[in-house]
Image (cartoon, rainbow, N blue to C red; front, side, top):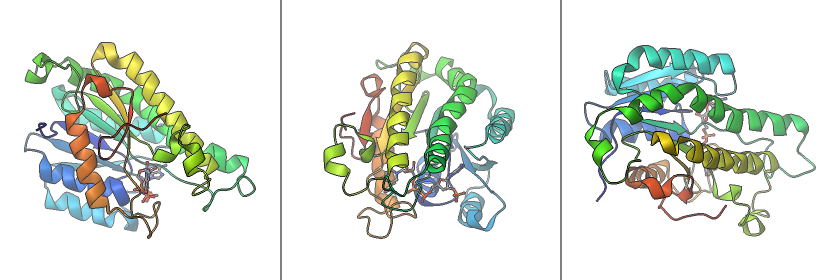
Length: 266
Ligand code: NDP
C-alpha cells in the first residue's frame, strides 16, 4: 500500500472539470501539513465560483492563484505569488492539468487552421514548459530538503518532488491507428505528443535532481472537454490518478501511464 500524497502541491486549470476534482480530493486526502495552490485564469469570475466555495471549506489549506498558462507574464506573476507564501519546504508536486482542445470536434484536417495549431500548442505545451522552468527552483528546494523521503530506497516520488503532466491516450503515436477515427483532433493530439516529449526530456534532465516527471492519461472523463457520453466521472478518474501518483517511483519517471497505472506506449 503506497503512502498518501503530502506537501505543497500546485495544480493548474482548477476552476472546473478534472482540475477542480483534483483540488477537492487533495484537500480531503492530504494532512494538515499540506497546502494546495489551485491555479485558474479568473479567480474572481463566475466560472470560479465552485473553486472559491471549495477553498472556503478548507480555510488555510487552499490558496487560489491567478494563472493563465498561455501568458508568460501571468506565469511569472503566479510564481512570485507562490514563492512569497511557500517557505523553506519548496514545491513537492506540480500538476500540469490545464489544456484546451480546438477546433470543435472532430478537429478534422479540413476544419483546422494554423491559428488552432498555434493556440493549442501555446496552452498545452509552451505553458507547461514555462511553468516547470520557472518553478524549478522551488521543486529543487523540495527535492534537496532533508526529509525522511530522501533516505528511502527509491529517491523519486510525488511526496518528495515531482511534475505530473496530464496527457491523453490519443497522444500515443503507436495507438494512432486505433484512436484516429474516433477523434481526429489534429492540434490536440499533436500538442499532447509534444507534452510527452517534454515529460521525457525533463525526466532525463531532472533525474540528477531527484525530481520525478511522468505523464498520466486520466481516462475518458465526463467534463466540458470529455463530453457527456464519456464513461468516467471526474471523481473516479481522480481517485485512480491520485492512487497512481502516490505509488510512482524512479522507474516511472519519463513514462506515460493511465489513471489505473497501466503503461501506454509512446
Ligand atoms: P475541461 O475543458 O473541463 O477543463 C479545462 C481546464 O483548463 C479549465 O479549468 C480551464 O479553465 C483550464 N484552462 C484552459 N486553458 C487555460 C489557460 N490558458 N490557462 C489556465 N487554465 C486554462 O478539461 P478536463 O478537465 O476534461 O481536462 C483536464 C486535463 O485532462 C487536460 O489536460 C485534458 O487534456 C486532459 N484529458 C481529458 C480527457 C477527458 O476525457 N476529459 C481525456 C484525456 C485527457 P477556463 O474555465 O478558464 O477555461
